[in-house]
Image (cartoon, rainbow, N blue to C red; front, side, top):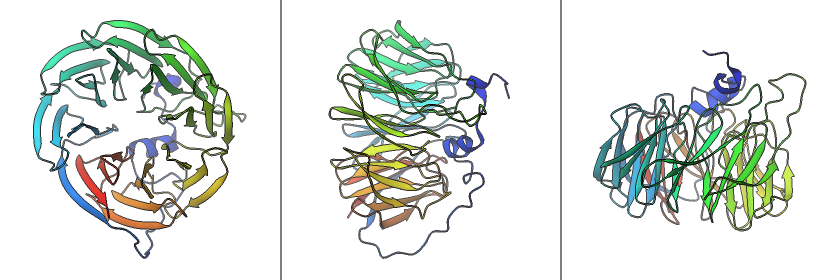
Length: 377
């Protein structure tokens, strides 16, 4: 392992959570308890891709198609309604970041620092060489592909050719958490969290910085204690942007200027989600919390999944959906945090947050490569 700490050191707690290598260090996984179901998780279909191995892959649903990839580099397109495979593409090399979809492109990132672009039928279009491994899904909007590399850079690439149009870079602290989280693109802006607890808003057209917000400030006397990284995707919700930091806070900012609206001390690696009333966060002990979206006030806390390396949440109708390190999917009531339903997949970790298919259905991908679609009844 390299001793270049800012880019290569895995923090013990982050390693387990980000890569699903068992339970949270020092915290015994909670045993699953019985409960009276108030809903049903009905399987819609099941598919499969290659194993994620040491990476975290995000399945994507666009239109009537779901895309998924494994570490060996084979992408499968599934019919969203039936789960039948409709197209395949091969990167012909190992993949570390994906799948990104946008502007008619299917996008992958590789450990060798390449971004690979395909059309929707799997035909290779172009490759772009960047400076470091691409661990997160590249994203595309308005003719620009945005890709993030492990050395702290964000690139804007021409969506037609892959040529570099702009690059944003910032220094990183001595220790940082290796993350598979990319960027959020919306309304001409690129939002991304960074080591040191910072959230930045960039212009999609040229990469210029619009504002920078402080999600969390490093605290403590040792470098390990001072790690305060934004390791999950921010959430853009109407006129506000929210993010969470490991060993830090959950904070929401005014979207156009970056003015802090509220912040609450909650440490999270897995991430956040929002609905009309609440912000949901999976904290670093795998408890799922609901906060008032306008003030940050606590609404409820579900701590019976402690130590189970729970994924980031998905807000879906009247429920919140999370997965855990044994491949269970948990449905939690939006109103009081009580368990509503539970279903088992293939026994391997669900690393990325569940993905919504529609107002009542969602998708998870397991470390072993299982792709499962469920609907809530």
